[in-house]
Length: 195
Image (cartoon, rainbow, N blue to C red):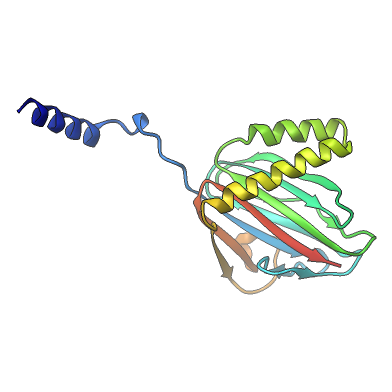
């Protein structure tokens, strides 16, 4: 009888307990748009994007929730560049500065990391890299990006949907198309560019 009473109490407690006692993972919804500079053409990011050396491009990120965003470029000579490293406010549309593809020709990879929580280890390695882009700091930063990519993909491929809305534009709300991500708390999206 006592066991049944304790079990009943526990069930009632768990059912009515405040949510703060049992934190749940936070799902994050956001959109990403890749734009060619000269034409403002929206490009799909589900395959390697063909461009010419000297062409410019930028990204527009729109978050439906407060989040942290980190964007890196890993070029064909295995150099890393930190393109963006900031918190993004809910509902904001964040266009990144335009970048031009430079010699040598090859394949560049953009890593877009969006997370509902701050990535402390990544931020520490970015600071070290910004202070000295030594081969050791470059290697450490790249390994952390790959670790986060493994972590994100280990939880299943993040939900991504291409949202066609016609036209070419610099703003997500004005047309063009973007890729919408939903249902995860950490995303690492790699975008390939060949020039």
